[in-house]
Image (tube, rainbow, N blue to C red; front, top):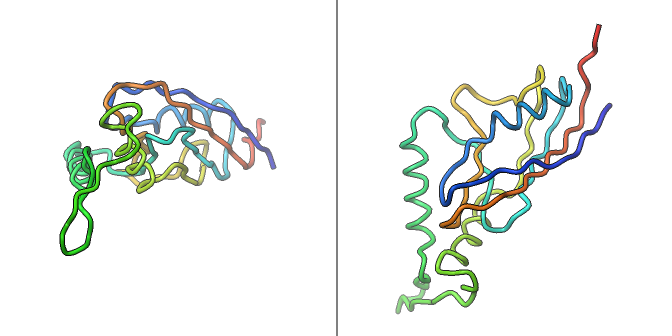
Length: 154
C-alpha cells in the first residue's frame, strides 16, 4: 500500500466552474497510482468542489443561477411570518464575501473518489469542478491524498 500527498494550484477567472478532472488524472498518472482512493480537499472557504455533468454547459449555468437565487448577495429573508430581511454581518471583502462562504458550506470542500487503472473512476458525463464563489479570480490550492497500489512495472 502506497500513500501520496501533495497540493496543486488552480487559477480561477472569477465566479464559475473550472473543470479540474484532467489535472487530477494527470497527477494520478504522474504518481503511478494504479488503484486506490483519492481524497480531494479544497483549502479555502469561498470556493468548493462538485461532481457534475461535463457535456451540456447549460447544466452548470442553471446550477449557478439556482445557487444565486438560494443565496442572495445582500442578505436573506427570514422564515417567520413577517419575512424580515437580514443583512449579512460579514462583508469584509465585498458584497460577494458572505454569500461565497454560505455557498461553500452548502456544497463540498472535499470529495473522496476511487482510482481505477490510473484515473478517477467517474461516470461518462461526470467531471470534477472547482466552483469559484467569488467575483474575481483567485489562486486556489487543492490537496490530493491518494492511498492505493502503484502500477507494477514489468
